[in-house]
Image (cartoon, rainbow, N blue to C red; front, side, top):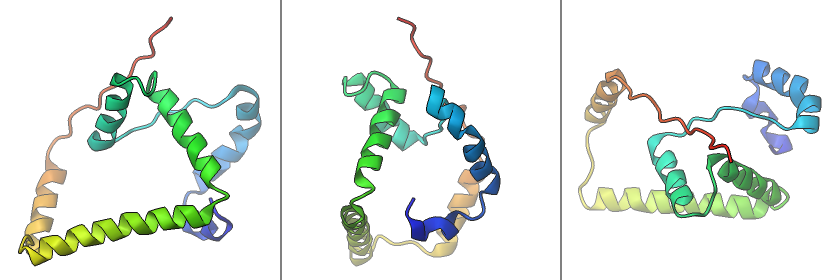
Length: 131
């Protein structure tokens, strides 16, 4: 987190207090937590495990967090990457508009409401394989 981002996260007081309370124990013994990935991210991660890039999802989380930490001092690079991601998204959206692939907002919101009302499938759970 960047020093200027502090107010952006001002509503998660309980989580911040829990982090403070766990820091010493985590420094000594590490930290275990449960993570949820939506389908698209879960699929990306499992493809990498299947392909041998990672041994399991926890190794992927470790590598990704380590990468994020290493990028932290290079905020200019992170900002440039974010700018490129947003530019690509905007370009894609403009191409949809130019090609006439747009829908009225009320139609989009009706579809979102229907999807939100549908029962959600139970998420898959990764089981650590003892070796």
